[in-house]
Image (cartoon, rainbow, N blue to C red):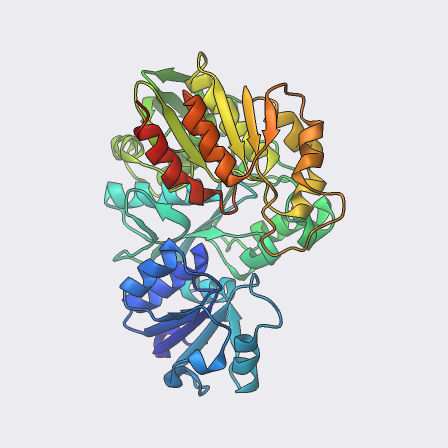
Length: 452
């Protein structure tokens, strides 16, 4: 694949966060870009406003004529999340096109660049975005392919003038094994995606294979305590190669000190909340240090970092109400998020609205979900978001609810959520999940902002 020869790009599943980043990348290069997705979303509408035609019907007649003939100038990209029997996919295969996964194309793009790849079952989106921001804000510069919308840049793809690229490396479907990083970070390796891997040991093995792909002379940065190691270990409040200590909240803001063998930085202000984000910042500082970015520039960048959409995102912050939205969908992500909420607002009643994501994930981690959701004062539990899955007998939100040791808990519909919030006016509210719970964010914001 010669990326330089590409003039047309069609993306099957263009509305995905990773796929939309590639769409924007090729559009920026001047390529003609079009695509298909199942439903219209805010993101697909934004792509259309940026000049990319998108169809929402699985109809081969919707494909622009310029994309139908196979050639070295036409690139067809697909996400494994699309149905295997998608008519559009079959059409391209039947007409002689070679189809490439998003991960393969990222591999092509990053092959000739200095690549910083961030992997992990959770934490990778914020950490990769934080790394990219530090490089941008400090003047070092980079390009970046991110798994979320950066609040600082209002985009999921960044463009730089050097050959450095930051990539969120996705373990789903072993996608990250197409990369050859110069610097690799692994933030976590908790059991997840067992519908793909089957056995947690296979997931761990895939992370080890990812680290093996680091180029000769490269650097592996691995969170302390994982079942494999790298060249540099990092942690929060555990002494290792690079760690944070003196973590504290002052006036609702997180501060900490950074320590490594050859560098100590005191009183770092983090622009976003969360104990887990302090840990993510340690990894980002370690990368910046490897690139010889000055400490004062690192400190300024972290203070100015505004995070990622749907990652500990403040929606409402007034004297009467605090409402935060987060993407957490794994028990350990939920634990990190809710623990940070407790540290930030120890005196407030915490109302949690949670939408489980995937029947298989709910089944595999039901006890973990039950334990961590018990950290709430009040739980409003929604039905499971199926995503790519069919229902599994006996696996539903009622089953999960029964296992949660919490007095104030109930199963609710989206409509009931809005009515409860209208009636109760919760002082500390969070919505959490990776499904379509984000559709509630705007109406909840309006409801809280209009409470008299």
